[in-house]
Image (cartoon, rainbow, N blue to C red; front, side, top):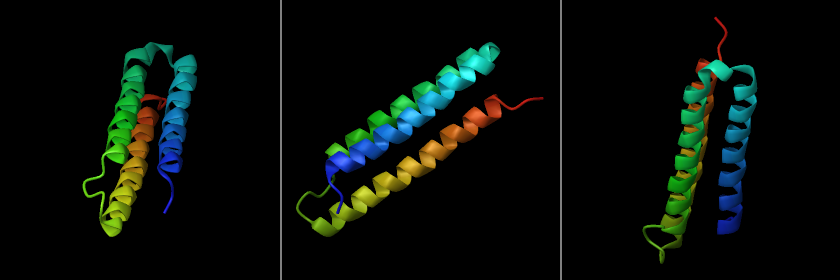
Length: 95
């Protein structure tokens, strides 16, 4: 099982990539600033929610449930980050 530090680093890495892509998009699409900033805020909210889940597993004394909990956290990280990148892609799509 990976350490909590590794899981938190994965979450921070993915969120930093989303925020970096948003900053890069702001340079090309300054007219859509409010929508891009909303995606950035969504990434920060996602990070805070996932860190909260990592710090507070439901059943601390059952290793099997703890592993399932952290697998769920990783699954949520992937799904929500893909959703954020999809939103950013839709915002920055050229007409």
